[in-house]
Length: 332
Ligand code: NAD
Image (cartoon, rainbow, N blue to C red):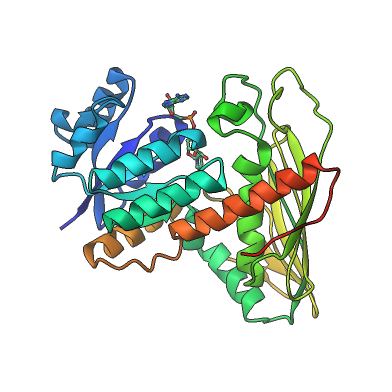
């Protein structure tokens, strides 16, 4: 049996990545959508071939409880809307995949996890890179200390954004460069080193376009300190299209440049090239979760708790930046 997934929010990521990926999955299929724009719903319905009854809107969303075609709700909305719809999805008796960041605050992320537990359902986060062989290799190189201990990480992710209506530029929708982009550097630093950070410091960079980014950060530099003594130096911004992730180790280095896109990774170490065949990250990510749903197995590598951990770290980064770069300790 294939698990039925309903995409909620038919913006760019659903349209360009998740919908097409669902044509390549083995254990799940696109079974419905939830959208505020009926024409988008019909477009998806025709393209992906599910019944017209499986098009929902944000008002009749809760009726999904009575639809056995749909097992999993995949939230692809601006982050500030994730908590409400995750909680409604769990109350409707569905499993949830939630895009990153799972919530714009620790308190709301905790409520989502409590709703999951009350419903006895499964939850995972759209952390697609855990399923990419380049990232799986750097996890191995770092955690297994193939070149000795990781001593320092430099990790950047920059995305050019110039639309003031984009949720990325709007605090009320969950925007800000660390919430959207820096989260990848936090993730990658942690899975490269295999430890959670114990403290952060951060410094918001001067805005280049304060008219667009008037209530969120356009760019942030931040550092994570790890128990082993390693430090990760990171930067996120909305004024370039660029990314890389590099680890210095006791015996050399390894890096991915570019690192974080859907495809096109290139990697090397001080002694060799890192090369893997192309995969569809999102198809692998959704198939992994679908198999867990089929087997009632809560041990996803990207659980709700990981999403909550990252929200804690991001809140601490903003707290540091708001307090002149003060060091904020973390207990994760
Ligand atoms: P987007 O702006 O293109 O799409 C958001 C959708 O939400 C739109 O269709 C919009 O109409 C809808 N929406 C519903 N209610 C809304 C409201 N009140 N205000 C604004 N929009 C509303 O954004 P996107 O790039 O598709 O991002 C959506 C989510 O997916 C975010 O959480 C983002 O972080 C995540 N995302 C993840 C990846 C990844 O690689 N994992 C990549 C891109 C986006």
